[in-house]
Length: 361
Image 1: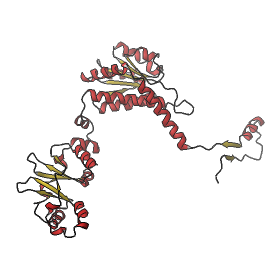
Image 2: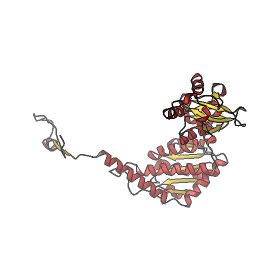
Image 3: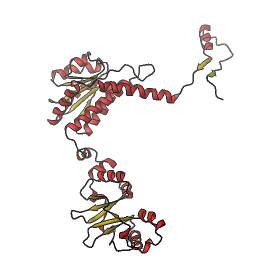
Image 4: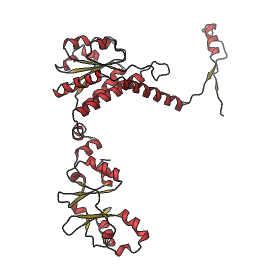
């Protein structure tokens, strides 16, 4: 039954409890009926998105020379083979762990230092020439501030990500990145939400600008992601994933369409590769081509396949990265990609169905 408001009734014991004071019983009785207003979950969820996106945009608008300084400081440390030491407590510490992981995966070595453990020996992971990235929205987190004197004595540059540019943390930093927010997405304005999102996006911005400034390439990225489909697609070469030439349905342009279909069937291939007498590529004829041509050409089977093949098909070199195959297949919406050698002779085919088997898709 659709109602605008829900009346909830809770039964209470009928017998008076002699061990419960009457004023407490009266309080309980007043709570027997509670009015619960209906809530639009989707509206509330979208409101969270709106608030956090708005605050993140405000953080972006405040980026200034200190961001440039922070990038230069981290870049200099990484280029001399030092590392970024990330400090944070609570939710800021959780965001710091993600920022450290992103930096490390993109070639800027980063470690997370637990503030409490740092006071009991873990400062040993910090070396001369390192740089410290400290996260604290208030800039006054006691556990973090207790570590800072030791960092300062080591004369390590500190980059502060904070919501208070006048805080104790900001005062000892070489660069201060402002993540202050006007409101959290929490309806009570208490749980760190907008502020942690701004920290996270700012950390991503640091990592991505560093990546570009250092000329980090796909091949470099693959070195740090050898596992899974990402590593396979970035590290493997086309010649490692293609079907070799002996498995290709190679036929001359004068062969009939029926012969082309027979060649495809015998090789379990989705396409016939048409080659000239000198072995160079002439075109490609796929099962899809046959299906499209047959309704208007019922006598197609006895005609030369050269009349129906696709001239100048999309090709790729065998030494190219497998990742490029994914882009080409998606962009051109094809299922078979011919692989050529330096002489423009077919040496293989990449079938889109093989990519799933090879766990590249």
